[in-house]
Image (cartoon, rainbow, N blue to C red; front, side, top):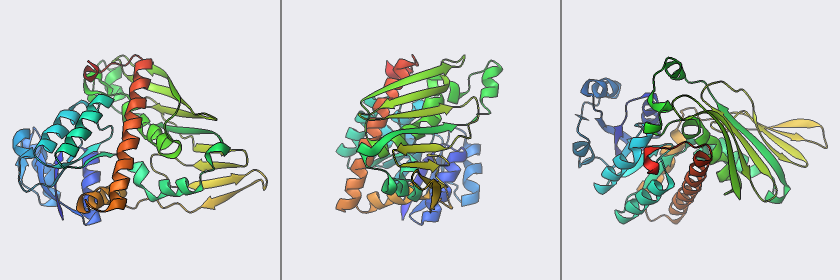
Length: 332
């Protein structure tokens, strides 16, 4: 059983820890937080009282095997490097880093230290996502796709009040693209590969990050339109088009419904989806399998595929930000 440490005590950390425990592959062992009381409160339901408020002490704990990082985006890179330097495997909540250069550096460091480094892009690990992969038309038959993930953030109320919460701050590598748009970009790259060109039409909020935006990923024979935002709600389905069929999904970040419309029959057919009863459990199991089977060719091939997708995703997101003139401290 992998001894798990966590950095960050927010709701998504709770969700990952619950998934990790449910997978029976991990045991929550220690918690890092700058606030000891917050860490103890987080650990209480899990019976965990080992808490560190100094990051260097935390990543040096000899009993830890793997560290999950869910701090503000701009902190991921340095925290992951510190953990890997101490020989820990690292799982970083998406987006794993602020720039493609940071990703390349931390991946190289992990390889040097014989550690594994994972970006927690949950959607590509889930059974429903893989089911869509199985029923995709041939690349030459695809004529387009539309993916949407837009959800109003209560933190935007603070922006409207003149404040700058982390998720809407350039200093913390925030914004709609980094928080929610990463899911739709991941879906496009995982299903269709790296596009030939990308374009972003973003609307900024007063803090300098994007509040809402539309992306176009141009492939050789088709375009993928992506919509994301944190200042409004969208209930649009996501769709993939060929001449003969339309695949209709409730979403791409967590797929619960898959339908296929046949143009010739003029009717839909349901494809059985497999939504996760415990969110994030698929990625938790996949990461544990890679760590626990370092010589297994199939798992190591999967790991390299995830890294390749992550590298393409971060290159794309960096280009999209540049087009929208969204600048982070990490860019400099």
